[in-house]
Image: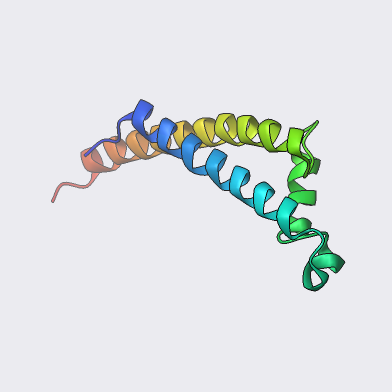
Amino acid sequence: MKFNLKAFALAGGVLWGVSLFLMTLINLFTRHVEYFQLSGGWGGSFLAMMASFYPGYSATPLGLITGTVYGFVDGCLTGLLFAWAYNFLSSRLTHTIKM
């Protein structure tokens, strides 16, 4: 069985882009809640780490769009790499191990 590279890349991009979008959106709404203020809002520490990976990204309304684009591109590339590696290794292993 082989993975469809385009479908896997698109699924990875949508998943990671939407995840980063939702985390940033929730962070923007919970920033002023007393319970979350130490970490800078819900997921604030995680989003600060993402800001170190993605130049120009921050937990702001503009960062919401920037992070979604970065997340989509990053997820697409990661999904493509994972699917390609799976297809490559599965074709190699099925030829060497016959069941």
